[in-house]
Length: 154
Image (cartoon, rainbow, N blue to C red; front, top):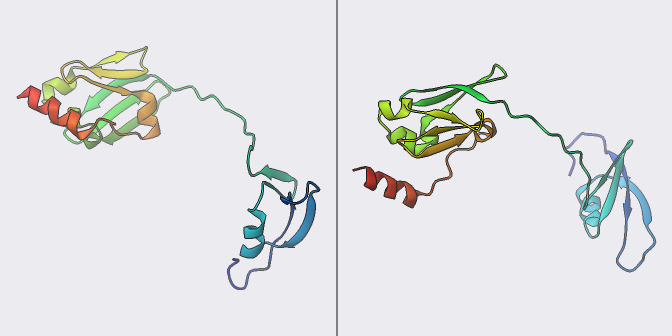
């Protein structure tokens, strides 16, 4: 449905009906009944010069170079990583329970791995990738694994 008071948008869509192999070209207001009707079969929606295929839409793949870590700092509540492209990323330490449970001396014992692709804390058995930091991914460790690790430390 369109918001009240807004002019209707007209779209042209091409729909392949199940009973017919011949495409049917229809034009009408873009309301919920028209859109619901267009979801029956694979549909081509046309709005201006762009064409979007509902199933099998192609997209270009862009490779993004992930910068390397150059320095790491860990405080009581933040992990901060300096990157080779000049950025600095800070994330909550709570995202990485092993780091948050570690002693300050253990947190400062880190090394870069894979030419700066990741950071390793040998005393905490923690590994964090720069790509994961940039993507905003917290630790994926299960609660049972973390509990076992904490019990082994005592």
